[in-house]
Image: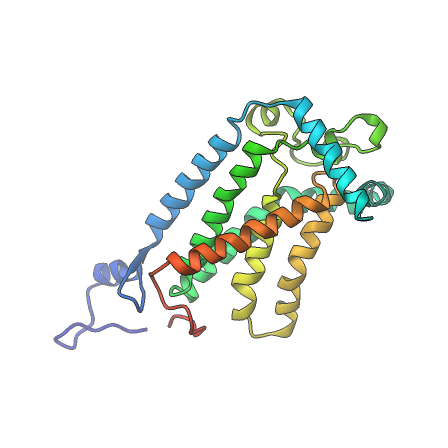
Length: 267
């Protein structure tokens, strides 16, 4: 989009840069990329600090894990151990799952956030707020229901920590990760929450059927990966999808910036 001033001439280069630094919304609000980056980094720092400040209670986490397994067995959906054992027999698959689990939830989520900011700025505030609210809601689960993931269960349950056993760049068992990461923050699954957010935020804005199918499969792939790597139970994924739904409902009612109905990208 070309901008001219009141005299009909083109603005100075510095003014054009200043104009591009902000996304002007149809509601009259302005979004600045540097402010968004600062807010996201601050939010994630605070979220991580709170998430990892919970005092670990291995006994309670193990008790809750047995409750989850018992509940899934009552529904005839406890298949985590058999799927995990099958995946471990295919070494390239489990290594790929490790990298998927350890990196894509950041890369894909950030990429889609940037895409919305640049191409659909009127819709960006609602989806940004949805993700922030849902992620904050996850803290309630971490505080109130510490849950031992399958990879940390006693050997009699026949799980292994695939990030420690198979070659990856990092592992939850490393000294630094054990100190920085809350090992029992498993319910709900933030991985699944973010994956479904990516699909809901991006799919209506894609034109090609192939890319729409790809982003639709992303949450399914995420659920598969968290189970195959023994990082979560199926019920954790349900928890992640639930907090996203709540986050969306709150954001949809509370967000005033932007226009919500038109999917036309910004020029």
